[in-house]
Image: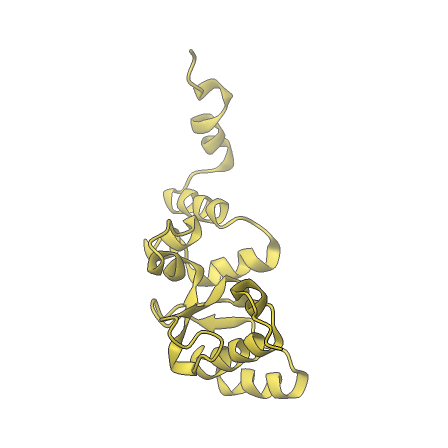
Amino acid sequence: MVVSMSYEQYLQSWAWQQKVRSKLLLDGGVNELELIIWNATGRLPLAVRCERCRIRYHRKRINIHHLHYRNIFHEKREDLAVLCEGCHAVEHKKEPPLWWLLVQGGKLDAGRLAECDASGVTPASVAASDAIAKLGLSSTEVYELTGPDRRMKG
C-alpha cells in the first residue's frame, strides 16, 4: 500500500527536518565554535547566513528554499538554498518584510535586528529610534514634532 504525502505534511516530517538541519549546518555560514556547540548540545546555531544577501540573521528569520521541485521529497543539498525571509519573499516575487527593506537600505543593522529578536522590540521602532538619535533629537523634541497637536484636522 502506497501512501502519498502532501507537501505540507512533508515539511513537518522528520526527513525534511534532517535536510533542513544539514543544509543550515553545511551552507548556513556556521563557524567552528557553533558547530562544536551543536555537536555537544544538539542545538542549532542562533545566527545563520543567507546565501543571497550574505547577512547573518537569527535562525527564526531563515527559510530553506527549493531551487526547483524536480526532486521533491528526495531533494539533494544542492537543490536547496538557505535564504532569509526577505530574499525568500523576493525569490517568490512577494513583498519582502519591512525589517528586510530596512536592513537592505542601510537603515537597520543586522546586529540590531538580532537584538530585536532577543528583546521582542519591533525592528521598525529600533530603526526609528536610530534615525532620531542620528538627528540628535531628544524625546521631548520628537513629541513636539509628532505629538497630538500635529495631527491633521479634518
